[in-house]
Image (cartoon, rainbow, N blue to C red; front, side):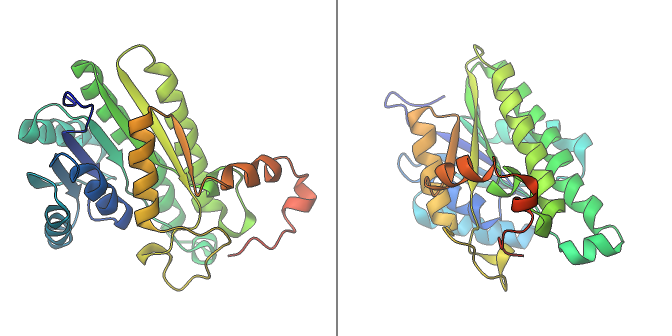
Amino acid sequence: MRDALGSVQSVLVLGGSSEIGVATACELGAPRRAAVVLAGRQPEALRQAAATVRAAGAGRVETIGFDALDTGSHDAVVEAAAGLVGDLDVVVVAFGVLGDQASDEAGGPGAVAVASTNYVGGVSAGLAAARRLRAQGHGVIVFLSSVAGERVRRANFVYGSSKAGLDGFALGLGDSLAGTGVRVLVVRPGFVVGRMTAGRRPAPLATTPGAVASATADAIARGRELVWVPGSLRWVFAVLRHLPRPIWRRLPLGD
């Protein structure tokens, strides 16, 4: 439960060693020394992430195992986190994979892995979080979406379509939770400079994990349901989403 000042007191980050996940945990954990649970697949990466979050000023920081593809375990993971820190004020769905468009088109398991992780895993984890928070009667579920899902580009349509599906799911979940005390925040960053995009040419209006985390924390505090990072992308896509497809597919929007 948030404290008397409305500050977050407990956070679960699914994808707890991701750069945006760690930055968000730092941003939410520091102001009131909130308890943080970082959930992910790699113990050593989680250990390093936990050290970073503690150094940033969070209070108690715990780590637990989580695999986006092991959907049968998601309810148990959320319950385990609540068992460690009590009611969950914020659950951040921060995991995802970018894939390699050319390789994924050529064959093999890559495209299915992207879709399974980003969409199927996100749906399963989001519903598990919603069940827990609805039982509490309060909380915020944050979904890390992407502008890549706002209008899917030919250059990364496997990844973009997975994010489009997750974005639509998250918005619908938020509508279904209206009046329950639980709300959903969808975060749509542009190109994020970091490990996931290393070696790729940054797109215009690129951002950073820290900027995404700061915008997320501000949106939670303001009770918002959707935030673009940077905010100017909202107006860019207000135009781009309406372009005729023959023009859209010819735009040099990167790889």
